[in-house]
Image (cartoon, rainbow, N blue to C red; front, side):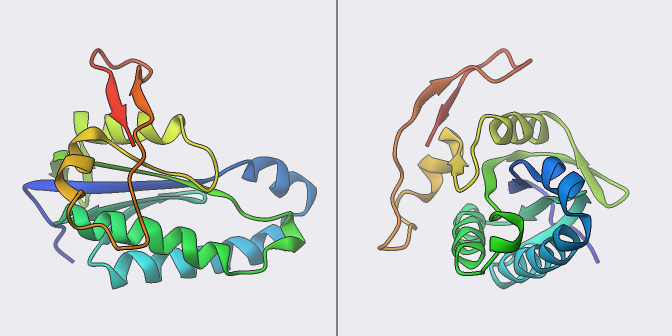
Length: 167
């Protein structure tokens, strides 16, 4: 499968607090994460994205259009919210969405855009979709009628010189 190239929008996700749950209930968590993975792949694929990497329960996906990336992030949160994950005390997933260029190499992406997306994810909490200022500017007119962007202000992201306006 050829990955998209050029200016792309990336969605990174991660389950909040999953390590502790794996320690307490490995068999139950295995079942929950398998369902999580199915929902993630469906939401990403149905919105035109390509999963290019998973690390544990974290997903990294690339989209040719920022509106599709935001739609996927919303679909992820809605799909996970409609599932019963009470056996593992719930699954709260944080997501980050950022747009820029990246270097594609051997089926993976590298560069500052990916670093910024990862740092944006790191400041999120389960249930949130954090959108960079760049992406927010691109999708303001494309948001579904039941979604909106809330300005969370400027944030200093670890190891990055330029702060990010976060929505």
